[in-house]
Amino acid sequence: TDRYAVFGNPIAHSKSPQIHARFAAQTGQALIYTAEHIEEKDFEAAVERFLQGHGKGLNITVPFKERAWALAQWRSERAELAGAVNTLYRLDDGRIAGDNTDGIGLVRDLAENNGVTLNGARVLVLGAGGAVRGVLQPLLAAGVAAILVANRTVARAETLAELFADDGRVQACGFDQIPAEAFDLIINGTSASLQGELPPIAAASVGPNTACYDMMYGAEPTPFCRWAMELGAAQVIDGLGMLVEQAAESFRIWRGVQPDTAPVMQALRTALK
Ligand code: ATR
Image (cartoon, rainbow, N blue to C red; front, side, top):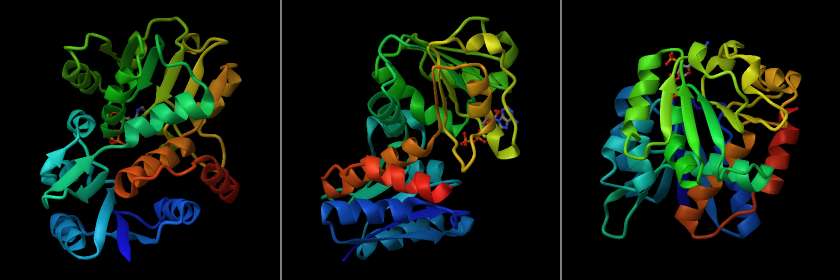
């Protein structure tokens, strides 16, 4: 049987095995997908070992996405720009291929699942870590008009914006320099929710037509989602759909079939409660 896994550290709470098991059942594909806790020093050797046997593909999560990027012998353009890889598999010639499905996962969840118009949208992105870097190119490709990257550490936001300087649509600033006007879309890509915190942004960024998206999710609305709801945002969406959509794109790359994400999202949402 073809084997797949997600490598990370920590990994115990990964939902990827149940997501891929549901995709496999739904599409009639025979495969085994497990979550593996990998020690920091073992990552590269563990990937080699896995992809030598029955292992057909890997998802890579924290803290190994940059190391997966480095070990891939071929990378998709979106992985190249993300500087991180969350999907590995072997090409026919034996080389290890690296892709990044996080950004397309976000774009699909926004555009297809939630009807958010990206074409021409003015977007405020909070945070400038790996999670944000991974989604900028797919947002630009979806036709957004402008992206303002705001971060606590301004220099990190500036470094990200410089990567996309040729495109001309990405600007950087600190939280206190965000212009006092409503954006079409605000995406929280900080990990502040993990500490129960909220990036300090002004209420003026949210208007009655603003969609707000948190890349994080939980049983309860995240601090960012609560904040957006209180300000009367048009839509408030958490990152559960992004998680399922990035998995679906990995599944499609590996198996050549597109799973139906809606029932899987529904099942995960129910299980969270
Ligand atoms: P990831 O790969 O998940 O993006 P990261 O590279 O550690 O992780 O980035 C975390 C992001 O969340 C950063 O933008 C970080 O801001 P700094 O660059 O200033 O560190 C942001 N962040 C984390 N905790 C935060 C908080 N309490 N308030 C605001 N921003 C926070």
